[in-house]
Length: 339
Image (cartoon, rainbow, N blue to C red; front, top):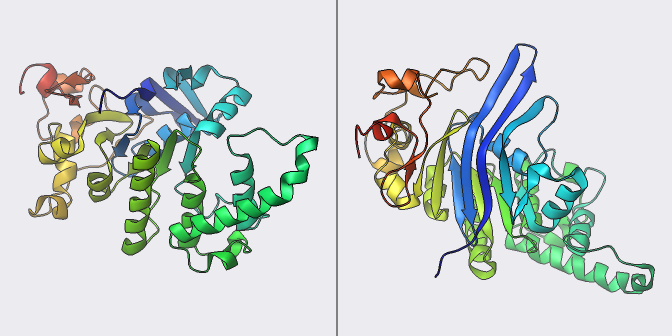
């Protein structure tokens, strides 16, 4: 396969939140890209800024209190941050799909599953019907319901013809999550943003969902930004991984390279804290993610880092190339200390 075009490119993204206690500097210069037909993982501890990154891309960040301070988000040639709300909606509704993290509040409570899925199937990525086309609406309705049943069946929902008549309040959290996954995989998008999509599901159903995403990527050249704290899932699904720490990108590389030979001290600690990935004794990372209102100077990881140097407290490290396509934001490499 030749060089694939980049469809999503984030550069220098900074996002702050105004709070009663001060300014919370959550994202601090995030850099990230996704190419056509590529599955990219964004991994890190809970609270590191993964979901804020997704919401900023989707223009669903609550503003206020949120503020985009710097940076750009290029999607299929458009800088999403320069588009009007209506222009952004047009681009994203046609070319992006999203699986949210919270299934309990993401479905419209006044519509049945069939009504909500049917509307999305009929209109997603298309213009509304004109008056002379309304005669075909019944056939389109029947087709959309049949498609909804098929999609629910593919995400392993039992009795899908019964489920399409139910309302969200009648479904469990895991069932709602599978409905959201089915809606996101309808098939008109160039990019799928999946925010912890299988967290509420058991292992058997999770396996089926991952297989379905893999199938869509292979058949339709779908690009995926997969947000997770589960490195096991990232190892199976992702071509490349970005490791996020406290609103910054610590390291990125091809999945197997990163997991087999991590360079950033945080990446090493993250992998070592999951015994199933290493086969070694469990090792945690001392400390916790810093307060975003008063983050550490220099490298945000330096208060927890076993390799800390004086420069780490003074200067923020830039992402530098460390062999092949790997990028690492660490003074061990930017100062020539290691390679």
